Amino acid sequence: MVFLVAYVEGMLIHDLPRFHIQKSAPPELHLLKVTGMTTRNLGEYIAAHAPKCTDPVVAAYLLAGGRALVEIAPQRNGMLHARPAEDGDDPNHPLRLLRWRVEGARPEDAEVFMISHDWLDHLIERIDDIVGELSEIRPPFGSSN
Image (cartoon, rainbow, N blue to C red; front, side):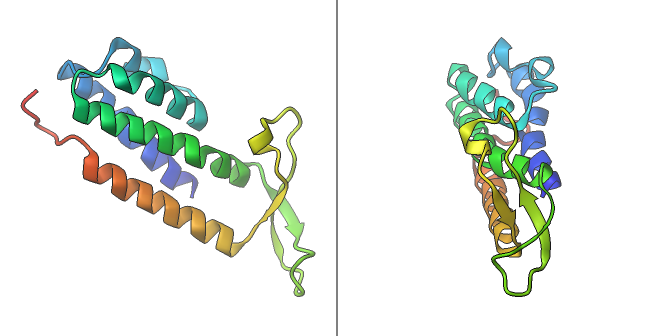
C-alpha cells in the first residue's frame, strides 16, 4: 500500500521536470521545491499551485493529483503508524494493525481504528482507481508544447 501511494507521488513529482521544460508549470512547482514533503503537504502544495500552469491539461492533471494525495494521506499515515493489536470486535480475536491516537495529530489523523482486510482492500482499490484516473488525464509525453 505504501508503494502504491509512492507511485502516485512519483507520477506527479517525476512529471514536474518535463512540465518545466515545456514551460507549462510555474516556478513554484519545481522538483527541488517539493522534495521531502509529506504526502499531504505535497498534495496541498501541488493543488495550490496547479492553477498557475499555462497549459490547462497540465493544470487539471496536477490539481487532480494533488487532491488525490490529500485524500489518501490520512489512510497512508494510519497504516504506517499502526501497531499490532488483537481485534476485540471480531469473535475470533485475530491479530490486526491498530491505528492508535497520535499525540498532537490533526483531528482527521486522530481516529482510532482497526486495519482490517476490508479496510486495506478498500484503500488499495481506491488508490488503483486514482492511478487509473490520473493516467487517463496525464499529459502525453512528447507533447508539442
